[in-house]
Length: 235
Image: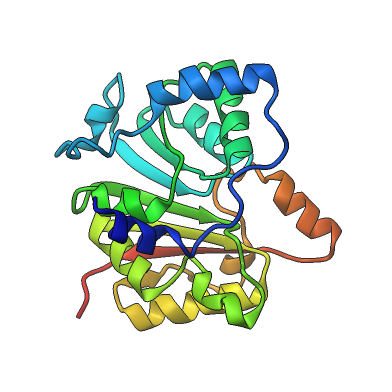
């Protein structure tokens, strides 16, 4: 991928890359374990993404911005027949996730430590069963809304890589971002909101493990919305 395209893809959606200095073990994991698990975008994507994993998998699921990794590890442990690709550009979060992977002993996770748009453009058509975008950076100031990950351009990316009937799951505690996502998916036309009754959007996803970020939001008086969209053909 040329540098101009990469720059255009990565300039908008995330902020800082690193926080506190890594501890020795974390730095060692980043140097040794991450290369073993990292998706290599310098090579063409395999026609069947299951080839990325050491054991056969029945489904492929992508989580964009996994933060501390609690949700990703939980899902990988409860769904050993699903291959998970986790994306997180924040170095400290990646180091934390690698420690979780080591402790849990899971082998159905692959990782990417840069911007998700680059990975999405690398993936084959109709290769994913599900995309999770959970508590993404809300960019709350109106002048920064263009930096929100949910956009027509990225919904086009989601629509291309999801299988027919595949799911896009979104969670946020920021009302403006929830409304933004509902409006953008409706305008796109390739995603059907699966809610059947008014309470659905307040009901956590099945077997939801919660996260520290969600707990903090609740302590601060913010409720969360959980939206599930099905990939449909564009009329």
